[in-house]
Image (tube, rainbow, N blue to C red):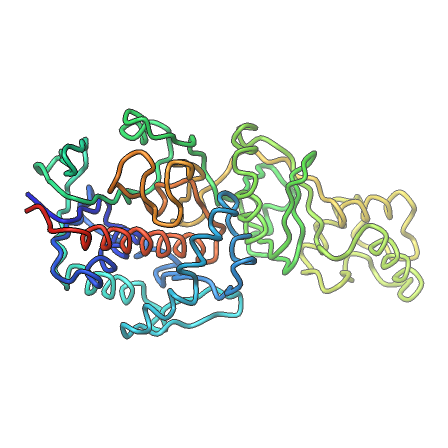
Length: 414
């Protein structure tokens, strides 16, 4: 089967690239190969089924800070297609995008199916042929044509995009390494911390709006909303921390300590002064019943108990030892982490094809002319908030645009 372009991978970046090719070259023959029976699976489940399309962050200098790996090269990517371009692209095709208070952006329909329908309409609806249950086994280039062997027969194409997604183990990239393509070994990113046996685990569902979480003995720390679960710690602060410290935590086999400061903007001395103020202003009040700075009562009670302060102890009776222990817990609660848990359905890996393998402005391989890469197959990953999808759209756009330009250079071979 002969095509102008073959896209390996029926995910977000692959579909976006197909749409771009067909927008510039409407009569191009495009094939999308997907090894599973369903396409756009991650789009379907993202954001609890709503699809977190992108983020409202518009400044490129700020946007790139949400990518633990590839920050500097990504400036060249987003200068060509960024968050605002994504919103315009979908809205020009009848899909209104809305922004939420935390800057995450979703389709106004609150349904990921709206995004899926749009992508399929702009690709399959304009002529792209979809082949599901079709896994790439090998590819070879000869006389400017790529020959692709798959579980569903052979394909030929002038341009090929590899958008097959990331793998959780290095073995998933064997087929690329055999071609001499350099790959960064993958490790998990965006995960929560398991703290078995912690005194906080019984407080599942409680949260602090702006805590600081730090990996003990390192410079890795992040602040933001922190959620207590029945297995440990979650929320944006933990997810961001897991992304930036992904390789370090992998080396530790996810066995480490974290320190939690329950108010990111309040240090030890300010907490100590607040406690001293309570002793003066409310000497007869029970410590366990009067949290500082609107901390959830059950969390406060748990921390007070952990400081070995009796249930009915009043502020004026708080001794030096108990005061110091309470200050210590409020400013740096130490928790033992033993393992991790994947965040919802959004499994993300840190690793993949090294960016040194491609021309970052076009996504074209430096070794193989007319071969392109996009999406999670590359060593780029973002924190939660729509940033991974944004890279999928941006890299798919650049690859699709460059592939369309290649097709325009001369007559197609078929």
